[in-house]
Image (spheres, rainbow, N blue to C red):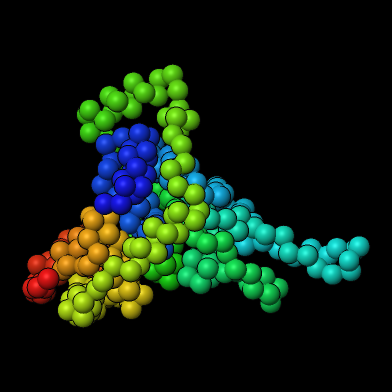
Length: 311
């Protein structure tokens, strides 16, 4: 593993205690140029995790607490008329940053949620017919609460598809909970961590991850897995081509973070569920039987034969 990358993971681990696997998943998504949706009950550290990444990666960060009265112009910006120059001037919104923390993204209107679609996919926003590029890198770390539907709006499939991965933090184990209680009794751990990389160093890590080699057999394996989701009787809407591309990019990041410059089939299998579970729309029969997307994807992994790649 790149020493700088290892230092990043260790520094974030000082704040996000006992969740090393979750930290690695988010870091892989960042390296893959993707966005992360963290879905879990309140109080398990979703926002703290996002803030820790922002600080350690040394990125310009903005936080939006999504509410019912948040409007699209709060996110992408707006134009105002300047009497002195006699022309409209663009006022950037919260999206003009490197890392956007979208807190409780499902508590705002569909119209406001859709304001992020262009930004998340094309790294730009369009206001009054003019297009403005976003800073690079650009990452959205969004959180949402799956319990208590009052005041929430389900994210549409088009927006879910733009998140590289969806993950759950989960409750800490016994030792981690004790450590959290002890460490946070008198101080905030976020105050003790520091930036490990700057913008240019992070972009170099992203570039190195993107150059990880992928053989055609890997592309074929990813295609067979995603096609299996489109034919599965329990799935109404399978993984899109965008989702298949996301699997490839995450597999490259997985290989990179594990110290390899080439992808093996096991890398694809390791990231497949986290990258695809939120992209599925289950059939009525599956919902009636209370099937979970994760279990269906696991059965697909067990059904589709994994290729043998010779080094």
